[in-house]
Image (cartoon, rainbow, N blue to C red; front, top):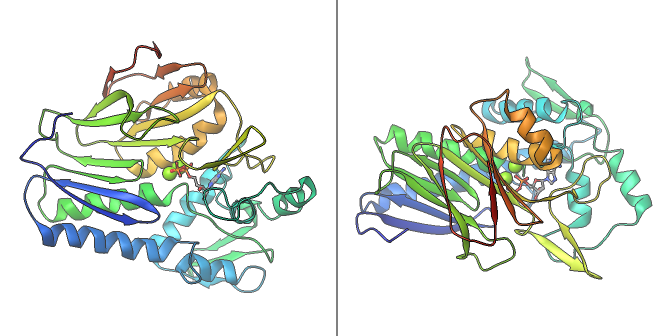
Length: 319
Ligand code: ADP
Ligand code: MG
Ligand code: MG
């Protein structure tokens, strides 16, 4: 991944993440257009500020249905459908647990087991009542909180891609802190997206994923976590137990057309583990995955939409 003089990179910090935009022209106004768009989306979906469309729904929990815009309603409908799948490890009503743990934020702590049970009773996705006619969202129980943290970045990456396309941009990359979406093939025949070495400095890579016009989303337990008494607590919670999901995985990367699928599937497969995921993905040809495990394996699903170059000998590659 040598720097290419034809590429212009623009960066910002938004949604609590470093954002990187790569273009093939020097175009400040296009870049500011992209960052403005991301800011607008962030202000709609955030639950880390007192006010947003999602916070309006959360504030009215147990009281009133709240009417939202079409795209917000659609995203919530999608999030509910995935959350209600049998055995889904994706649950968009996980908000009360996320707020209690505060993983990745100051003030994090391990909740008492009893508190977790109480909070878990507020995380039933079936308790989110959607009315298509009024486009309203109602959280049936007081104390419920929607958290779209596991899907919003993917959705926003697609919004940015569509915006760039509308501006006649044919070749670009947007990275929303782990959620990469691309247009075209970059400078060298394909965009190169680094797979980070877990728990190492961000520029240490264990491999490179090459794609053209695809999304590459990685969710790793080394991104946001805290340590206490030799135990690591990371930010993807098990909706069944209320504790961070615990299995053989360090990260899941999804290669797909749309970044929203990547974001959904990283969280879903994270809970499934490698074996079940690989079996499951056989029926879903447009979703492909790269898993990194605690025992130093890199496991690749089919490679129709991407190519993988390993960069670290200490990892075993399995296909
Ligand atoms: P990343 O932050 O690496 O993109 P995800 O896409 O899985 O990882 O999103 C994690 C975020 O989603 C958490 O920070 C939290 O806000 C929320 N979250 C945590 N656990 C779950 C879960 N089981 N289902 C849905 N959302 C979750
Ligand atoms: Mg994500
Ligand atoms: Mg996700």
